[in-house]
Length: 159
Image (cartoon, rainbow, N blue to C red; front, side, top):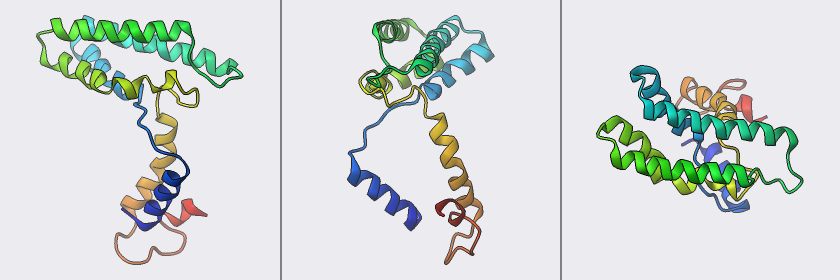
């Protein structure tokens, strides 16, 4: 890990403890692939349910409550129903690929539902990934040893 990234992470950790918040886009991706490739009814239903959460998030983000909380009764109800449904489907599904998708979400359920208690957390981390992608790409294509030449690599993003 580059020195500048270590320093940035150390500063961020000192400011506040880091907690995991899972990305619903990543959880949805496995189901989406199963739905697209295999036309699996369980996967199609999982995608529909997760998309419903994203639709509520878009609506709430447009209005943004004064308390900053993203959650409401409706989204909490949907999340609880989704968890129960995933657990039931995993118990009754003989197909390993479907079970893996459900297990991925259920083993990280606390992280997936973190947004319910903290309105600053979005359902997905796509925006953060896009913001960091340039740094990761610069690190990958930049020189890996010694000093980074002026105007290349991570220096572009740290100015």
